Image (tube, rainbow, N blue to C red; front, side):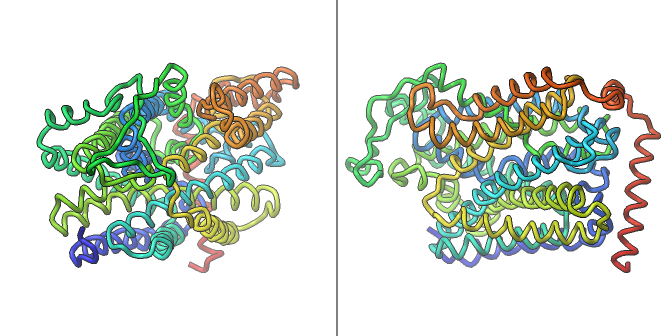
Amino acid sequence: MVEGDFWVLFAMLVYFIVVLTIGFVYAKRSNSSTSEYFIGGRKVGPWLTALSAEASDMSGYLLMGLPGLAYFTGASDAGWTAVGLAIGTYLNWKFVAKRLRMYSVKAGNAITLPGFYSKRFGDDRNIVSTIAALIILVFFCVYVGSCFVTCGKLFNTLFGLDYLTMMCLGAIIVFLYTLVGGYLSVVATDFVQGCLMFFALLVVLIGSVTMAGGVDNVVTFLNTIPGFLSGVEIAVPVVGEDGAQIMNDNAPVFDMPAEYGILSIVSMLAWGLGYFGMPQVLVRFMGIRSAEEVKQSRIIAVTWCAVSLFAAICIGLVGRAAIPSMFATNSAAENVFIVLSQIMLPSFMCGIVVSGILAASMSSSSSYLLIAGSSVAENIFRGVIKKDATDAQVMIVARVTLIVVFLIGILVAADENSVIFFVVSYAWAGLGASFGPLTLCCLYWRRTTMQGAIAGMVAGTATVLIWHNLLAPLGGIFGIYELLPAFIVSLLAIIVVSKLTPEPAPEVLELFDHYMDVTPEDEERAALTSIEVEKTAAEALGD
């Protein structure tokens, strides 16, 4: 252990200073208007868009949750989840990114996802955007909490410091640079953090394989654990009354492997469906500089995602061979990345590498905070409560919302025995089922109605809550990941209700029929709108 090691702490302090500096550098520009603060004025290039989308998506579960799952039960759960995520990433970039970028410009220059939904249906009363904003607020509080858990576990494992204190400290750092810098600071820091996460994964993977004696030794050892490397079986740790895995002469004890059937595989592959409804990813599509740059971003994002997921799972598997008896619970196993870094790297390098975990947590939670703030301020406050609100007033409400979500996130993260992977899976299902079917229908089915959109969001959210809390404990077929049944229910609700209600107004259908025909004039009009808003905001702020 490198408990209290000066160089580890120094390296992480350098990282803190860098990300806070970026936030302050972008503060003046981001605060010039809501368009700049919430979506960067649609001026973000392909590299920043790609790595920002992936870094904000891959929260603490990439460097802690996924390796911990692989360490504890083997390749099946983690592996099929990663396959689903990789496929979902590609499909989202392929079929949603360009269309959403163009439609959001055509639909009144929408700058938030809930705002896009309302403008897509000509919803002048902002009913759709209000419901969407409330759903985002609920599930993002859970998401933010999972990121804060990551911060607490990181510092607790590294330095033996109090979990709750360290969790709060990490949360405050995230809050500060999100509060000050807005979307541009989040995107810029996400780019830096995405690079750091990628570097950290490769360094720890290569180092841990070397430490374990090479690939052959690792595979030989893992093959002695029943079902550990199988894709159709799952390893079953033998646990005692305290819930911890039993050790025999410092060797972990496993029972006969359990079957990992088609239902389980489909359940894990269903993770990929979540991407179609992830606001933190979809808003990156809306903010890219040009729809023509989406293809380049897609190549970068999918490559980063596939390599990172593969490396994260391998770290968990290799960790079981390198330090087989170190962790006795799934929650503890989520520290495998940190412990491997401590064991094999020089102190300063360890600090740089484990900052990748901090990077994962910070990039994600900052995005969640910003999107929650923008949804409430832009879509509820200005959309419903005070329609003539100035940009200055909207940004005040957004920052108050950030504080509320920040505090609720801390409450969610207060339990240090939380398993990051399972906390994330709950929020992922909620957002994916609520918005995924709706996003696809908005982009591909002209007959979708506002009533159908509302029914889909409500049905998706309700199904996740009911399935997760009431049906899943029954086991059997009900043990399937709640995202899959909730996604299907939401899609059916949209289709059925849309068919039973009058077709959309002619102007809504006309907009749908021509939204892919975005012209340079449309882009210029959107840019001019942003400039006009910036001038208004500058006058309001006295700049």
